[in-house]
Image (cartoon, rainbow, N blue to C red; front, side, top):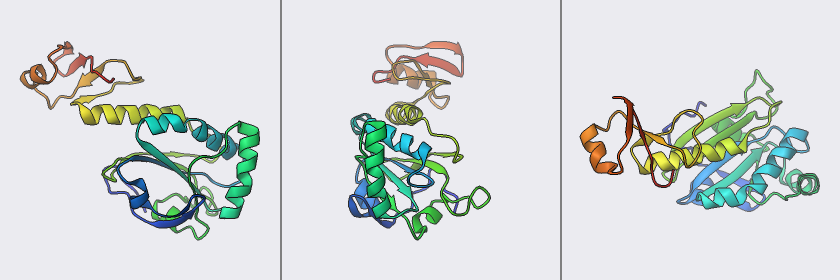
Length: 211
């Protein structure tokens, strides 16, 4: 199944290290970062889960829940956690889905048969409080993800949802945003009384509180 941006993230029930969940109910009114890793007790995944756990306070600050998935069992998840805590310095502090029947993986298109039909690829979905998919990323099994980029995208999405702006290339929180073309200059004067810099009629830079 191909999950597209703007689509409602499919609901499901699953067993996790935090107990059984129904995904939409568990997500509640939060943003969600839902990511898969190929296999327990593997080196790249060990570093990723340790980093996600270390950054959990940053996700919390953004009203964002994180949840992981692999096709391994709950028992494997639990045993692996000790290794993650020992080698990465942070124990896993978010739910891990045990998708041994691959039902969730198939629902979200996380298994790519031409890559490896037995495991998931490194998929990331960012889902908003209305349960809409706002970002999807797919990494090969050999490449670890950049969770700072996931945080950056969350910051951009939350800023642009609040204001009629977009964020430019390599944008970081605190930097200028761009007024979207659908907002006329007249509308922009009402929305952005602080003013803006227009390099071109379609390229208007603005300082936005919270950016």
